[in-house]
Image (cartoon, rainbow, N blue to C red; front, top):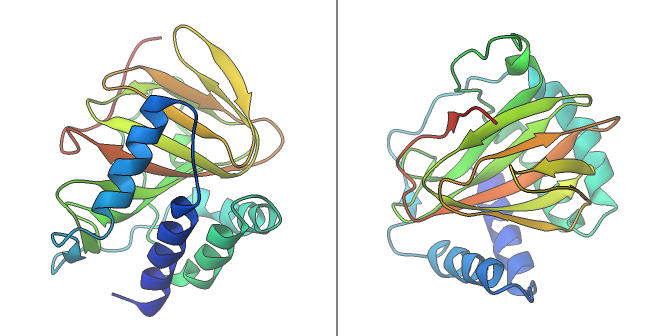
Amino acid sequence: MAEAIQALVDTIRAHFQTCRSERRDVGAALDHLRATIDAPSATESASAVPPANTAAARYLASALAAGAAGPAGAIASAMARARNELDWHYNYAPVPGQPDLPEKVAFCEILGPQAGLRSDATRLGFSLLGPGTHYPMHAHPAVELYYVISGTARWITPFAAADRPPGAFILHRASEPHAMETAGEALLALYSWSGDINSPSLYVKP
């Protein structure tokens, strides 16, 4: 593994050691991440996914610059140093009416079953959405914890919608539909999956 990626993982680990939440479900997701990011099964994979950078990655520089001054500044700075090692992807099937999503949405996974750093218990990576983007309603069996690095976006479920700023945690329960919308700035958020991390995420009707 590249030294910059290892330093990024170390920075994420150190940052989350200081994070606490009054919500029990968020706390449980944080405990799982802290317990598994150093697990013995988390070893470098011999079959890492090759680079497939998407057009959406062009928003990364501005998102990192914005994040460097916020509550997740250490993570943003470590990402900037690892920038050339981050492989951004968009893996969804086309969405009717939104053919430009691959140019606006990208994902980069650094820990997981097929990531450069292998783990069978956790997925850890980043989501990047360009300005003025609607990331459609989707769901997956995994429990998902987001941590906003930069950009205030609107986070939507069938039951509620709220603007969440940098430093916020957002938890999606297993199979809970959710969507995001950005306005004038890009969104960069760290995500982690627990539970069923092998079943894919699929777009669903709102």
